[in-house]
Amino acid sequence: QVQLVESGGGLVQPGGSLRLSCAASGSIFSIGAMGWYRQAPGKQRELVAIVTEGGTTSYEDSVKGRFTIFRDNTKNMVYLQMNSLSPEDTAVYYCNARIRTKPTVTLNNWGQGTQVTVSS
Image (cartoon, rainbow, N blue to C red; front, side, top):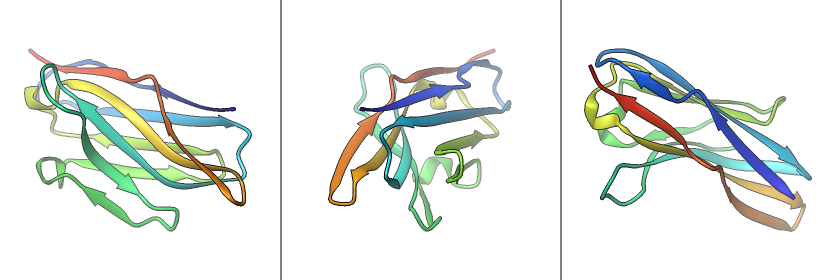
């Protein structure tokens, strides 16, 4: 069993910042790519940012220069630092990770989601 638990969401004013955290726990052999997705009301879930096992990052165009994804492999955690937030960033944010429970078994795992609301 593997579990991803997000934290750090909340209500913030436009222009503000939040840091999301995601902790992986359970029977973990190793963790591959980790990412953050978001889903706004009435919209499809979209990839926000991803970081590979080696630390290479990639971002959705609208968050480039504002959001930073980073991971701590010693703690099995991934973070999303969000700056200069705008109302368009309002969504439920989900953590995703490809976790190997054995050398030849990889599972795609999701967290339960954390709400981010940007409003004055």
